[in-house]
Length: 223
Image: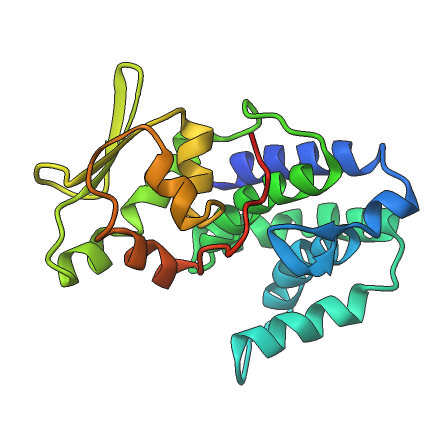
């Protein structure tokens, strides 16, 4: 996981932009089921505004949620084309941010790509930087699982597997990488998580996922 994240970030961004360029103003006014406080356009403002703020040295000084809402509000009235131009112009700063302490920008974007797609009815399970995203997704649970005294989480997809940390897995998801990334990033309800093909009992693991990102109360309707 030491390779530069910028190429994977840039590919993800360009896929998002390609989808957005085929949308109407009405499309971009749709509520995003995974982020129900935001429209598609506001979600675009979100993914652009964070690297813009960080590259300008603008760090949150209070509650993170208030900072994020403030950034989105500042760009909510800007045209989508303007936001896309600003996003691409951030490339030099993004490369440095992703190599430094802001690697989470990539994970946030990779999750939101499919939040955009879900809201717009443009699913594409192959649109995922698997080698960059899945190891980071599952490794994020190492500390919380160890603190809770739980065995590792594992993902098995065909002849490949990923594990949160060393040891025999306590919960193994036997799913494709896209489903694993959506599930482990709280894009599935508790009922849906229990229903996924798996080995072991999910019950002890759902509070860990919920603490990482709150589980949705209602299904996002993703296939």
